[in-house]
Amino acid sequence: MPLRGDRKKVIRIAGLLVSAAGLAVAAAAFVDFVRSVARNAIEGGPALASFPEYYRQVGAYYTRGFVTGFFACYFLMMFAVIVGSWVDEIRKSRRAARPAETSAAPCLAGEPAIQE
Image (cartoon, rainbow, N blue to C red; front, side, top):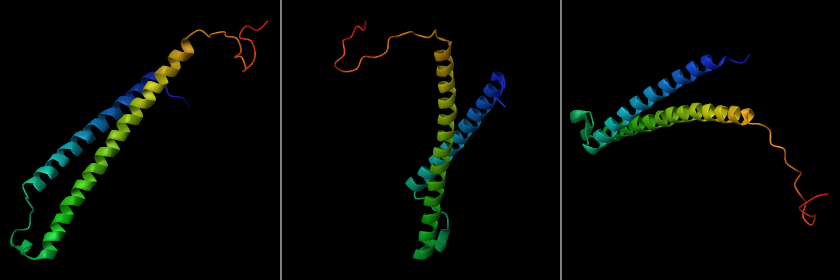
């Protein structure tokens, strides 16, 4: 069942808002991750004196950075798909609204350009 134009528009705008909000949260988390790595601000206190605990904490920070990057890519792709499908639909509707062009059949190699 095709959706009416205004309902489609509302759904697309809602999707764009969700993706923009997700991108904003992912960007904030990414900035926090970069700051914590740049400042070497690893939580753990005196427990970090042992190497295994230190590497667990570093692994946790890089895992957080990976997850943040994944969700940034997810919301960016969501945004791109919505905008791309919207633009494609607009282009198809404009193409359908144009009058049909009548043109002669293309010539094959070796045939004269003007057919009698």
